[in-house]
Image (cartoon, rainbow, N blue to C red; front, side):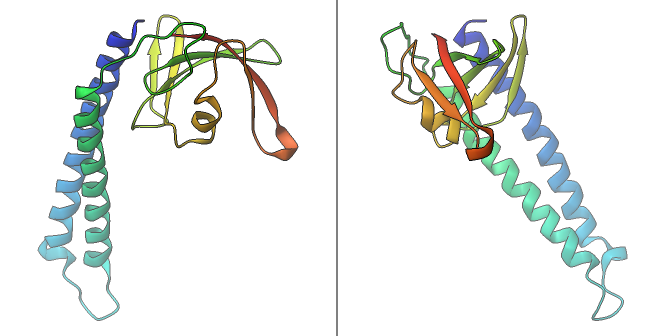
Length: 160
């Protein structure tokens, strides 16, 4: 999958998430303001709890809208073996056991997983621990991930 296709898949996944969270926010708001949620006594917090859920859903929908705006304007860069990793790099990593995985360094939506013919691509941000480790590295470099007791060495096999 090339990066233009990957960006289309990321945008489609974000649009689907936005639809879900927008619907959930409207439903939670309706529940919070419904007559059956009005408190029966000073200890009944059903409406208050529903309003917290509605606000959380609305906040998440707003975050997704912001990510969509950023991704819709994002221009993928081209990389070669000597280009330092930065935003829009599609990186193939290999661990000590030979297992490979691909990560896309995006500005938002860290943790989003995109499935394609070659496997799964995980979106990471430069602010994540793995993203911080990768920024500025090149093909052939190695990084360490994990905590002190469970460190893993990863080699950078490819950057597109």
